Length: 294
View 1 (cartoon, rainbow, N blue to C red):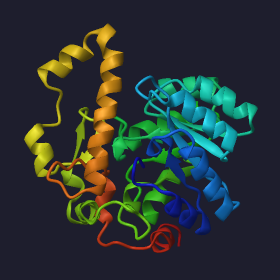
View 2 (view 1 turned 45 degrees about the vertical axis):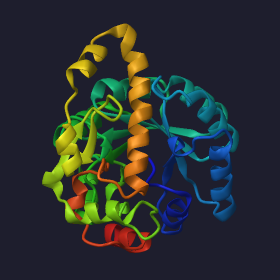
View 3 (view 1 turned 120 degrees about the horizontal axis):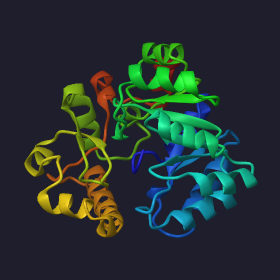
């Protein structure tokens, strides 16, 4: 989870018997990502991964991919673009690649490019969300895919995992419920919001990155609205300006998320999914994992 996941959370998750990943976008300077991977490896020998945005909105993509390949985590999770180059470079260095997909079209593209697994991001996910309900997305992928499927979106309880596995998933990706964990370093205000708000308070916005993003409907978000304004729509309709605009929007959106996650400000934009419905207090990761698996 962008800005939410950190090295301490990854190590705690690994010690609980699950794997974990941390976004490359958390690290802004050259070398920081490689050092973070090395630091985690120094603390544990268990496998973990790195999330990597692979479209042109990520202006640091090539540098990040180079650092990841050099540092050799167990896997890469790609999102928001073609994973071709990431798959080729990762496989050349014995790193697996799992690709976020939101429909069958992209799932088949990822599989044909050599992905080791696909992550089925459904409409219940926090952050960059899918558009299809899991009951629609999972059966279609299960019937047409020949690589493992990881279910992503809305996982908060063991019963959710059981349901995902019955739909054909080989595993699940869990995010939102770990925001309210002891090891997470976001602001107390962010954690309190995850506890106090519910599923009905999750809305979609394109104002952060240009792609659909699930966030908590705070008073500030209600003030600015969650739909593109006329200027944003004009830019997105122009093929020449769109790529440049997405890059600018992504950078501005990341800054807004950073300020919201770590500072006391009324301009709050907090990413989360409907799983906040089942978050009632801040707990250690070990306790959260135990509830999910026992």
